Length: 300
Picture (cartoon, rainbow, N blue to C red):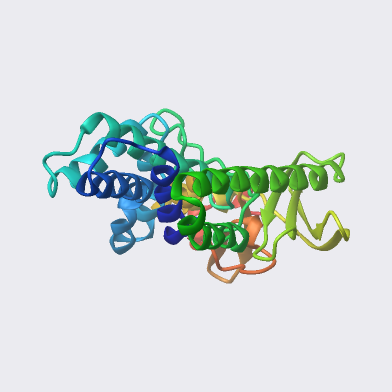
């Protein structure tokens, strides 16, 4: 999810907790612990400046692991304790941990993959039931802030959580219904669109990807397809190019294209979930010289 939504989810954890017996300074510290806890898994964002291979290796990796979430929450409380030594670590850590979990679970719910079981399982998991920026979630929070002064913070933000859970459940059910329309395929992957209730679905059938758009109200409409090509140059590209390996590890699903030229093969690795709308997003290409491919295996 976007960082604004993460921060709002962290605040909602604090606001709905109803902590009593704390002065204003302590309340502010608990709120800060929850908000920082909700943001801290993205601490690996600095790897953006260290090259694509490092970024893809660390992005939504170990800092987004369920197994490491208690340590991430402890780090969040430690940051708050630098400014408030009187903070009660037990309560603050519990709030920060719950907030950290909201980050991991909301990232899992959207399209990009999340390493929930890092470092023991390197696979990225994605439900695809929420867009990166979800307008309905932001609208629910806007209503919460408008109403909290009149009806009380704790009461309203517990209602906010109820509304959020209802909305996510409806989105999950909606995606599951659409997936059930596509039978006799190996795998279907939903991709929630910015407009609520709208989905793209990627259906994998052997080495082909079939692309659909639709909703519960309009049904599904096929908009295209692509083929993931098999060729000796693909394995060679993965052997020689670290960025390509990192991308394939990062993606829960990937496709390949091979284009032959006079001197070599241009191998492109891509994320089929973005193939129709943003074909260059989460993709990379590698040039493999012809002389590196044995002649007897070079034909597609």
